[in-house]
Length: 304
Image (tube, rainbow, N blue to C red; front, side, top):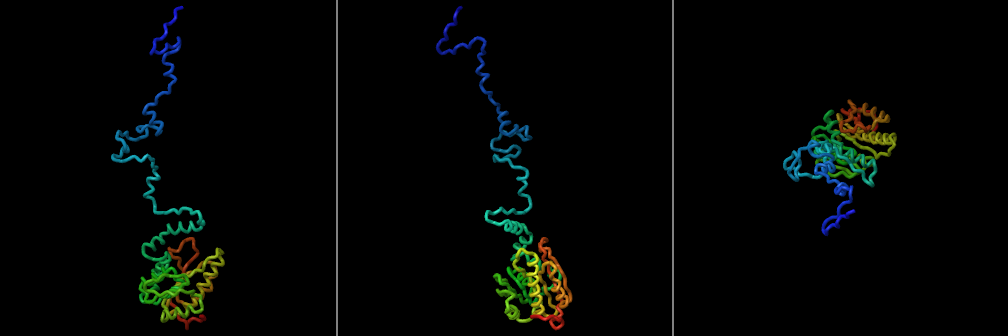
């Protein structure tokens, strides 16, 4: 049998009989087309995903001049800028949950935001504004006493509404308020009533009290403590008010305020209950407004 001549130098050896010369090409990995590469990277080519195909590099299809960022933005993320102004508070590592809730409530309270916008020191200013708008007891030139005046929101309202003499008292430091005098002492101190009288220089037209005792977490105890403060405020009002004067005081619903209301009804012509819109709905606080003081001689109540 004749043998094949040996391959010349520089030429590849012949393949064995029965084996195709393209066998190595079949075993090589297939090259992926540019279109299939697009399928792999983005899931489908641009025209299949409903986008216009753009030949300009560095631009977003359908948006001339727009630059690509390499980041997909969802519909929710795109609309985030037109959502409400609510702010979320990040949970602090060393902050109690109750503190986080308080911060969240403050940041998203419309009255807190309104107080800042109008220059009031606290949202409580709007409680007094609403009460006065309804019952008109803060008259121009009136002498006003504010018991538990810190941080000064009610003093600001009284001064802005034209009160002639405004005196506040609180054991907490209260920065000066234009048009008012502030005594930094506890209203329950024995000599507090006399010092208030001296600062007023005469009887008062209006006595206000937004006093609240530090809470203990026990609702019944907290209620009794607030009622005790309200009773002290009523006793002081009966002593210092002019005939025809007005009294406004914070109380908490709880059942122990009945005697206080009876005393007010004996000494004032009109006694009303109110819960201003600025008072939080979850709070049990309400306000009592007593108008038309009958005068100390007309009432049979003894004052300290």
